[in-house]
Image (cartoon, rainbow, N blue to C red):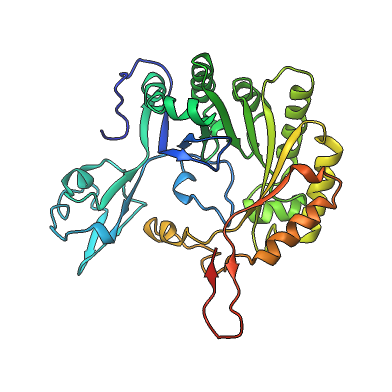
Length: 340
């Protein structure tokens, strides 16, 4: 099914462009979860691990390892956005409209459209397929992105419908949205995963494209709603540890002080997420460069040091958790770094 078409029909209600539906996830809330990734983000983080979610429209990518070199796609693009150089295909993303003509001709799915328009009823039906996993693992559905609050008119009724079916719901948000939109989706979320990246507004702007004032203000309002009983969900804070950006003692101490002062009685988990370096191929397929392509994984020692700084920041040490892969340092044999 090509983007822009949905089983529910054009007049069936709200829709959203979904990048991916990831099943059996263990990283986006409790239990086994089905995570719905929406396209479109309000930030431009230099380290973004999902660059295909930055823009709201569908995008065409080429997977070279799948290509059978049949050349069936060569002459079908109405915008002349494909260029073949020997056995490689280059996509002019400025010209490409993601119409899907070339992907329809590709027998091996080497050409793929990232992003598909889903209707509300259709998506609810899709996640219901995993209900047995939710019930046995105390899991549920998480809406991520991109930024789910940018699609509040879709996400709010989607979460509301899932909760009415007794499915645990969660949203993963950066908080960079209107307070009204955030409130409308939070009212139907059993868990809110809130990203706090940098406490310094200037650094935040340099690394994400925007300052953090609205993000912090929305978080304080959100915590007030939870505290006063107007919002049903628990609150988890997640901080990405990015070498050369958010990974510093100063930043972690500052974030911890903010959490302790404004959120200490409502936050039930502060997760420190170690940097991963697996996004380089995604950027290449989209014709983009990645500032962190050559950045190594953190060492286990660095990750534990970050955890210790956070525990000394004023936040309840019991709610702090450091997660993610780390590298193992070679022991004098000149070997390469290994990952754990």
